[in-house]
Image (tube, rainbow, N blue to C red; front, top):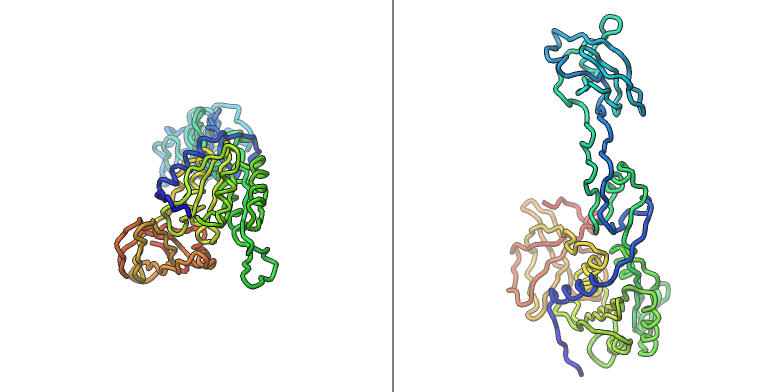
Length: 423
């Protein structure tokens, strides 16, 4: 029997990132309504000043600030009311000394005006005049051309994930479409004679398929298009045929199960039989996640990951997800939210492998308590009960109840289950 040749989690992550980053990326143009969550393929450079004209931020009067220098509530300045700005139109005349123009919020300032006096500080004067009850400074209650963003500025950097504010900025600057990275195409394969569909009733020794759904969902959240989810029995020929077919259409193949060292190591044998396959690693010093495999077949990445759901999701989060970010030209630093908490009970880290513990958080008067959840990889509900994760390197000393720990938050789990506030 072949022995494990484990590499560190950091090395596995580096190899995966480097391999997927080197794969060519295709781009496509999409409309703004389809761009949310996509990855910008190039810098989006603004071609015009925004706003394109000086405009008012209040309802009031466009004025020359120097005309109102002596104005006060007890000694208002009298200005000649010479016109009104209409929304969506320019004002054709330049205002002169002692003049004012009525202007709505968002209206374009007339030439010669350098401030807006709010209507709350005005009153009607003799016919054709308005009384100004306070002074204003230059550019008060207005935004000037280019205040928001100037021509030539980068609105969205290549590799950025497009969010709702980005859509607003692009629309305001005249972009109806944006070039994005084509989504990596993913095939998910789950293996095992014991795997049955969720709607089936298990016979003794059978379990319902979980990983084809969780892994497909994780891939989609990571910006991929999942085109197929296959369930394959423990058959060397069957798995090899599925992988060969998937290579023709997929940028990434995720195989769950069948990659342990032993007589049932179907994934490794199937991968090694693929023409041009190059195995980068098989075995990671990670708990859970030891039997993880990565091979490249041309530009297609093939991951063999554990069959247990908790281990599979851990490997995806720690290795596959950052590699997929690199595959799409993104930064692999995905900005984890980390808080400090205190342990609710002792932890004994693994002596030889990095270990990731899922924890439930409890807000108390004295701070946040992190309660480790059962570490058995087959317990699916651990994923829904966890609020965060504690990462401990191999050989870390035993931690006692009350010891401070850094907890990486699982933000998506905090909504319904987290009843306190994270400080």
